[in-house]
Amino acid sequence: SGNSIIGFATGAVGRSIVKIFPHRVHFARRPSVEGGMLICLPHSHVIAPAPPLSLAHDAAIIYTSGTTGRPKGARITFGNLWFSAIASGLHLGHRPDDAWLATLPLFHIGGFSILYRSVIERSRVILHDRFEPEAVRQAILDGATMISVVPQMLPRLLELSGAEDWLRRPRCILVGGA
Image (cartoon, rainbow, N blue to C red; front, side):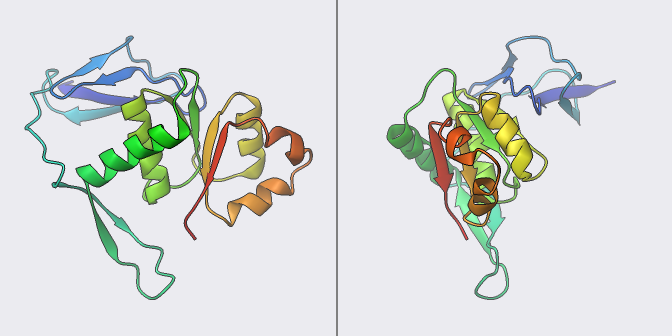
């Protein structure tokens, strides 16, 4: 139909099938829409080489929460994302079985950063539509090794039955933001 596949997100399965190189996108296996979402653009089936990027170029505008007034757009460069992801990898390490549980909205820098880090580290992402404590517990029991939360989420997780046991399973729980 003239659409180009540019990515594949898998929800609960969380298997990354897209390999991203500086000038091409390669699929590790044939995409399937079962259990995931196929992302398409109306172009030819060949993805043209990407123009060179500068780390100083804007990658995104992420809005603040507005706790001190109106939300403000913060310009995030490719360099900001790259060096944050590299620093995270250096401090937290990386394992082949890592699976980041993403429950923060993707318009939040915490949620957006999970995707960027995972592409660089080639790790799995388990993408949830929203934060639901019971779904987080189940994802951890099913193998999520890392999770990012904001402070308001942590008490809701601690209220769940057996939290002192299952919250020890992930090798990393990042708490940040407000």
